[in-house]
Image (spheres, chains in turn purple, blue):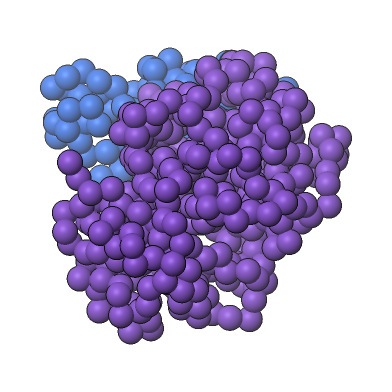
Length: 381
Length: 135
């Protein structure tokens, strides 16, 4: 049986707008996450991050951090990347390629004025000539999935708004969150329409930010400062245009979720809380369906009536999510940070009671053309 | 026609037959000679079986709106000056989905299932971009 990787340390960079560089954010986060684990720079022998620099991926940040890893991974599949990195780190650890894997992220989207959701979506590849000519934006691609979901299943804007409202309620309990004033369904519907049917408050915020994770071999359990979180299951998948025959209402979570749960030997009923990538409200609704928390098409009813808020049946995004706390462009790392803190019981006012199992699901790219999904099942010690 | 401010395609040898056909106001899809699968967007191999033996075949240019969004805010070149506009996935009669704009229709009248037909935006000599309008 393969050794079960542990998440030993986590850190979320606290600022939402910063004068620091994306490299500095990562260095400070790396140091803090290693401190959280009771480890140090010299212990790191595996390094994982996204390719901020096309062509050479992690080389500049490895140089800046002055690391000499034995194992390097620059997998870049959108905002889910850091969730996938945990899966990859666990595999590398199981194979004996490294023992202390450091995962970092840093971004200055807000201070650089990047319009993450509404900018022209051009990737610079062959596919652009069939998509990017048409005013394609990230929010537009997700909005098309929302529209189709409404058509097929009668999902309403009010139901989508419930997700934003519950998430804001959680943000009000997180001192670091960008927006903390409670909002109502009416507020969401009254906010400006960006790309119908998605309103401004259906969309994630734009912030600076970053963070770090430390994933280690189980042999190190006794050397750690805090009780580590166990990685019980992990999986990833890609969903794309499929040659022109795609059911855009089924996301990659429909594949990665069941595989990760099966590896953990658990079902959605065993999950105490979930961290679900919330680029937009529709992302959450489709993902919850695909992970099996409810049947396809019943997401609208599922997210209503406080079920996904603290105190509900399945609290999600207890940090305030991308919708209210932070979203520097690739939010996956924060999903893991919050899930680990919940499992350790460190969340104060927003703590989920008796949190035993957390599910993390990252979505990267866009539901409306192509995206990745990465699922982790985490358990407390 | 000279002031088309929206993005233009970067045409390669792989996609040139598609764009040459657009210039003639003809929409092409592809059919695999090995497994018979019809595909869009066009590419050098069959997406189903990876055979390189794919042939160009004309689409009737008719279909229905699979889904769409009316965009009110964007940074996209050209489009930011023409708000709101409709971005859509269209399902062609040949069974494949095409991303495009729905044009010359009141955005409030666009709906999932709306019958549409291809129309070509002649942006410059030798270059026409396929868009869709109510059939």
